[in-house]
Image 1: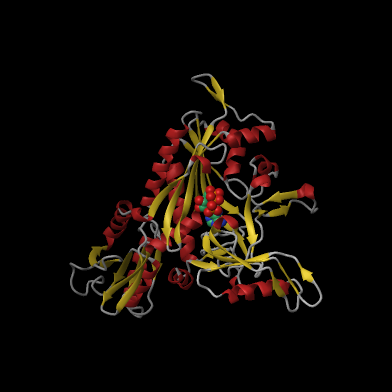
Image 2: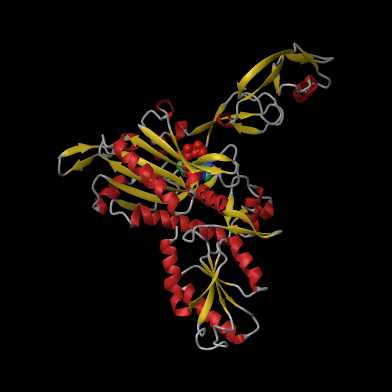
Length: 503
Ligand code: ATP
C-alpha cells in the first residue's frame, strides 16, 4: 500500500488536502491525473445509469438541504457510530471496527499513594506470554494521569479472555464504554447562529432523490419502474478516517434510487446486483478481486428486505465499494409523514395507488478510484534487474489515453508534424504532449500514469526513408510494449476502436 500511496503523490493522482499546512485528516485532493481518473469513473457510471437507459432520469441537488430531510431520514436521530477512546492515549476508535483479541487481562480495583486512595477500576490486556510488568507499567501510567504521583496498584487479578473488543489493539489498554457520535457535519444558514438556523452537509446524496421524487416523476414522464440517479459530494465526520482515501470525511457518491412496484423487490434487487457487477468489470476491475457480501436477515435494517455489498480485495483487506439495498418504501413514507405531501404513485393501467418501493445501488467514487489504482499498480521486470512500474488501467478508465512525442525536440520539422498529430488526437481523446528526455524515459513516464498508447513522430514520418513511411508514426502499446507503424490518417479510428473494444 505504501508504494501505491507514494506513486499517487509522486505522479499527481492524489494529494493530502491542505498539505502545506500539515494536511487535514480525512480530506484528500485529486491531482491532474486523479481528476481525470475520477471524471472517467463518474462519466462511465452516468453513461451506463442514465444515458444508456430510458428508465432512469438524472438529478443534481444541493449539498445543504432543509434540515427536516435528515429528521425524516433518521440521520439526526440515528446516524451515529459507536465510538470508544483509549484510556491511556485518548486515541479514538470505532467500536465495531476493533478486531477481537485474546490474551490475559490484568485487572486492578484502583490505586493509592501517600495522600489518598482512588477506587477506579482499570485493566490491561496482554498477549499470552508477555511479562506482567508491561501491564503494571500501563496501569501506573493510567493512575498517574489521574493525578497520583507514585501510585501503588491495588487488587491485581488476572483472567484469560477470548475475542474481546474492549481493549486498544495497539497498546492493550482498556477502552471507554462505546458512545454514539453523530457523523453529520453541522453548519448554520443565514446570519444568525442559532438552533433554528442549523443545517447539515449531506451525509449521502440519496435523500435529495427521495425529496424530489414527485417533481422528477411529474416532469420526466417516467413510469414505475424507473430510477433517479445522482452523483455528488457527501460528508461524514468519520471518527477514524483511514486507509488512504478509503474512509474520508468528504467524498463523492454515485447513487441510484430505482422505484418499483411493491412485491417486485427481490427480482429488481437481483437484477441490479448483476448489473452493477457487470459494470465493475467494464471499468477494468479484475473479477477475481471482486466479491459480494450478502446480508443475513438479522443484519438488515428493519425496513430492508435484502442488501448486498460489492466488495474489493484492497491491499488492506476485502472492503465495501458499493451497497445495493432493497429498502422497501421506508424513505418515501418518512418524507410523506414529515412533509405532509403525498408520495403516492398512481398506476394508470391498473388504477392502483401506492408508495413505490426502492432498490438503491449506492457506490463511492473515491473507493472505486482507489480500487482501480490498487488493481492497476504493477511492477514488471522487463530485463534482468530492470523493473518498470506500469499502471495497467483499462484504456477507457486511463487518465490519459494517448501521448504524442516528437523524436527530438530541437528539430522544427519533427516538432511541427508532431504538433499536428497532437492536435488531431487532442480533439478526440485526453492526449498529452511530451518532448523531454529520450524516448525510453518518456515511455516509462507514461507507463507510470497508465497511458495505453504512445505515438512517436520520427524522421520516417517526414518521408526520409521514402514515400512508404511518409505520414506514418509508431504506436507503442503500454502492456505489450510492441510498436506498430500506423498511418496518421488511421490513428483516430484505430484508437477509438481500441477504446470501444478494450475493457
Ligand atoms: P462503511 O460501512 O464502510 O462506513 P457504509 O455502509 O456506511 O460504509 P453507505 O452509507 O452504504 O456506506 O454509503 C454508500 C457508499 O458510499 C459506500 O459503499 C462507499 O463506497 C461510500 N462511502 C461511505 N462512506 C465513505 C467514506 N467515509 N469515505 C469514502 N467513501 C465512503
